Image 1 (cartoon, rainbow, N blue to C red):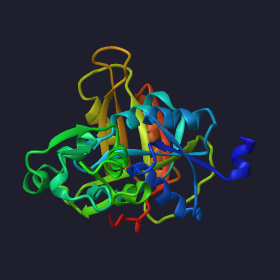
Image 2: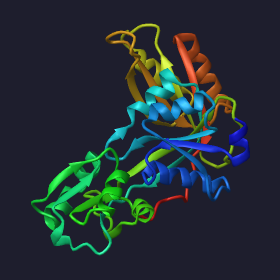
Image 3: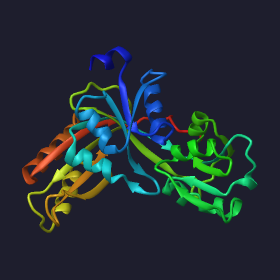
Image 4: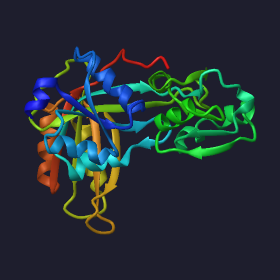
Length: 293
């Protein structure tokens, strides 16, 4: 931990450099007054959480939900079942895909298009119109495809403008995604007990709820407690506990903090009826940090 203190706080994220997660790190760091964050690229969200739990990094950035693909199950499972990390803040990143090539490469020489499978799927209309008949190369991340295209004039990539700048590729077209409302929710995480780093008017709380056993009416009972407290739920997702077939828990988010009396009362009532109520964090939702592409 001494090295981390000397260099500044370290941020773990889903790598490699140039991914949307990397961009989200810089978004959070900027709000914290850190212009050049120390970062550690990880191979998976599991590894990001592990870096936090083991104290290897002070902060981590994970994607929680995408407007097109829905909740990120690996993140929800870590929050609920595997990790003791807490959420310090939340922000939304606009996801704008770009078409990248090697600098000066003619488009008529492009024979294949590389990207993460989701990047290709989200830009099929553009590819059918502008690059018909090209083969597809699936990469581990959009950043990997940007690096590939920068060094090969026969390959075009689908990635963000941030990756293009990082790897020296040329942006040939912007906002090529089929659905322009694509956004991803990212969380800044740290170990339990970490001091708050943001303030804001809009607060949210995330909890994991575990039942004693599967029985009719459990979800209705949970929702009734929140409704009685007048809470506005923003997310509810059932996830298997991975203990036995049919054993599920609920990941729930709602507006407000655990310092609010109605929320304390609702959670205390649920503690009397459920096996466990795990509070993952009460944190501000940051605004004004949208990505211009």
